[in-house]
Amino acid sequence: MSFLVPTLYLLSAVLFILGLKGLTRVKSARRGNALASLAMLIAVLATLVEMGVVNYTFILIGLAVGGLVGAVAAVKVEMTSMPEMVALFNGSGGGASALVASSVLWGSVIEPGSGQTAVAVLAHAPGVTTVLSMLIGALTLSGSVVAYAKLAGKMSGNPILLPGRHVLNGLLLAGSLGLGVWAMFSVSDPATLSMVAVLVLVLSLILGVMLVIPIGGADMPVVISLLNSYSGLAASATGFVLQNNVLIISGALVGASGLILTQIMCVAMNRTLANVLFGGFGMEADAGATSGAAAEYGVVRSFSAEEAALVLENAESVMFVPGYGLAVAQAQHAVRELANQMEKRGTKVAYAIHPVAGRMPGHMNVLLAEADVPYEQLLEMDNANPEFRNTDVAIIVGANDVVNPAAEKAPGSPIYGMPVLEVWNAATVIMIKRSLSPGFAGIKNELFEYENTMMLFEDAKKAVQGIVTEMKEL
Amino acid sequence: MTEAVVMGPLLIGLYVFVLAIFVGFEIITKIPPTLHTPLMSGANAISGITIVGALVAAQGADPNTSTLLGLFAIITATINVVGGFLVTDRMLRMFGKKKK
Image: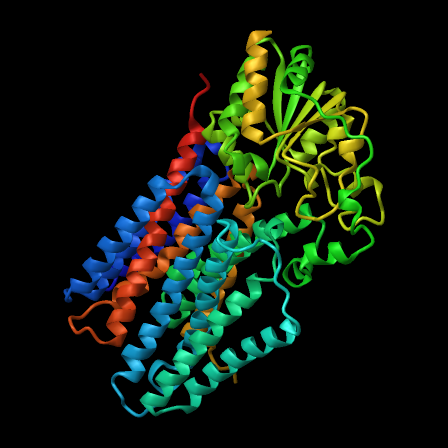
């Protein structure tokens, strides 16, 4: 028996790695995900074997309730709401890690009431990592809930900038960590220790809220990636508490994954992580030299769906550029229908995907996959940009900042230097947008005034459906 | 005179952690942007591995603080695991669909 359990844990760790490896290709991705879930099952079985026969009442209740909630959420969620869903799942993972660490603290130290300190009972390393696990787990939970509220529109996506927030956050971090570690080494009275533990959890929860409220809606891809990473690190910390390598390994894999995605998102916005986390981007742009300019537009040409259809009828190649507006309007199926119409007429169709289009990494790819768009037609930014010169019509559906020429042409602009899709190189640009209102960067988009730009002022879905109807009549 | 260096559990854990981070970096930098959302939800489900700790925490028949914390840990971890893997599979099924 002593050989079986560690072997199963090793098998589980290997399968997690192979599962992630499967995700490197579209063809093997589904199998990779299945391997990872098999790894999870093996880890759970190994633990049950290790535990021997115990009272299963709470275990079964927990598995039943959690499994039901998770399954219903996974089946019912709209693809457009995937960022909110992932935020909530991140939060539940972080919360679970904090709860496990807390349970260890209560079960091993506080409830037995032996009058010894936590490090005396648990040994040094687990004692200290218990605090880390509670801190990271709790701030992941509360941060994810705030991210969810912002993504779901339950609170404003605007950055909330409290004065002195950096000092306050520093104090919260130092306070919860310092207090927790101190208590592990010095507090032997169970009642005092439980009070300190609750205080550490509360401070960590407040810190999580404070870390996410200053971050604006357009920066959400960075935050979700980062919270993803935290949820992995919390699991790793729990692994140190329980001295279980499977937790350490899989937590580290998730931590690494989240960090890489965070890095990719930051590069795609030409910003440092520190700038995203501490910047409060939208507010600073408003206070800058471009303020007020957002509303000032010169000649903007507005067109109807019929005119757009006429242009598209003669196009040999079109490039769709989807953005967050496509997700909000649920326009992915309408776009696919328009693409079908075009392809029937022999037009070459492709899609240009900016890395931060939408609210999470890969958001647009998932929506278009839902609408049966073949993934071979989706071009990454670096591959799409040279193609615009050979494109007859670029159709922008609900994107704004990621196609703003100011990023390349206006050195004074807040977004100058951010890599963007060079849609203006296409012969004609059809911009579908509800109004001239600025994007999340809060700045003017001169593309609207370009001579080759046709503005179509309407909801993305209605506009695209309108063009489809017109095209069918042509 | 040299003493044999015996690694304690903390040190072994740190070795494992650092090496796993490198493995993660190696694999994940190869994942194409198209799969970034499924990667996130899949990785997210993997972070639910903390369910292993939750099982230990929730054993026992007495509804005391540690067991109740364990119960809530199992609920949240299971939501994460079951929901995460299912929703990832749902997305990947769409990617795999054949062209009509």
